[in-house]
Image (cartoon, rainbow, N blue to C red; front, side, top):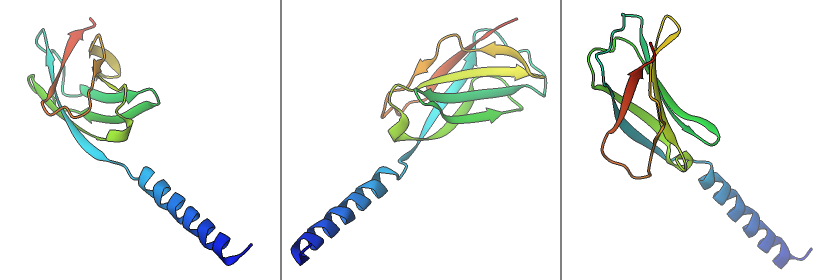
Length: 125
């Protein structure tokens, strides 16, 4: 292999390595939501709210909160923007491991959303 081919191959490999490095770097964003309920939340102090952002490949981001207080309950998720395509938010409240409230339909998330997304829970009792 001559010097010119080696230089070209080296440049090609360096470019590929740089592109791979850029492709692997997460683009972190935050997503604000608020959880509400059509009926008053009747839960004890051990109740836990779980909000997850899920895509085709599974869970992208998740948060869990206790000491819930009265709705609306603010929630903030940090996620990789590259994984947002086709993603939706899911929310539920469990108490002592038992599902008490849940969101009936996943809430789709669009890229670039700036306003908090409202997630409405319904009682499963």
